Image (cartoon, rainbow, N blue to C red; front, side, top):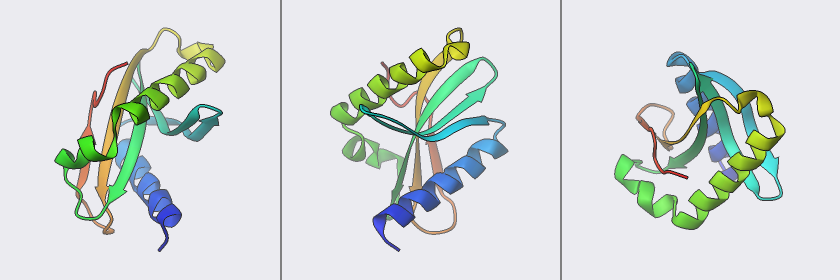
Amino acid sequence: MNTKEIGNEGEKRACQYLLSKGYEIIEKNWNTKSGELDIIVKKDETLVFVEVKTLPNATPDMLSSVLGKQKQKRIVKTAKHFMLKHRQYSNSYVRFDVIVLDMQDLPPVYHIENAFME
């Protein structure tokens, strides 16, 4: 499996996980010139921008090495573009989560809420 296939499979697993936790999928792979948002979900009054990382032997402490400050800034900038284009979510709380998955077809799935702030 190549890197793109691994990423797509990881995003599919992340969506299944989020749905099982009561989240509503709003968008997948939303793009602008500034970047891409892997998954956008809503639960109650909170809009969540989810970055998905599929890694070999994944653990939650790998987060800092795979999601640096530049990547975080790009995600926030892209999220702002999304909010400008989708004003119906303007009254929502906003959160940035990360889901780290092991490359194997089984759990673990590590869901890190509020992984970084704007």
